[in-house]
Image (tube, rainbow, N blue to C red):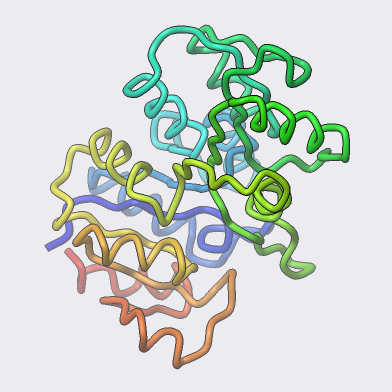
Length: 260
């Protein structure tokens, strides 16, 4: 029996700015029923407040407290392992910047004095940003990636994700980052702590086999694959073997009592 849900956003509830059919009905059902849920995303570009506004514009109302991003995971990780203010060079957007500011960290403009290099999706990344990041890491800065998704789905097709930027940096420095988002355990550990349900009674709903479903299996969760977002073959699905497979979240909503 599932007592709580972690539900992916990009490719699961929406594609870019287009809501996937059944998304509102699923969220409204869980909210009305009082079933704990968090909307979970590897995307670090937005704050929970910004994500909530994006969802509201598409017709879904959820408070920021029900949204958990890989930038929030960054904040929880730094509180646990690197407390106190530090200097960070960031390749990323608002989600990361606001999270670091809430911790009292200093955002530096170049590699000089950077104790950490923190990387997420940055749609304005350029050569100068990559240069400063690799120089800081070569001088000893700790390298942290909010996620390593190589792509993210849009109605146009797959576009470069944070992993594409991370890989450009690792190619130069030869150092692997600490990765916080799916499929690493950090994001689930912190999210489930906020959710307050046992791992084995928590379902993870997502469109990616390599992150959502693989991580859920690893953590002993109930895994629910939706066939939107990142495409996958039948052979790939069989290898990972999700507990439930639905065409989209609309079909999940119509069959929700199979999980409860």
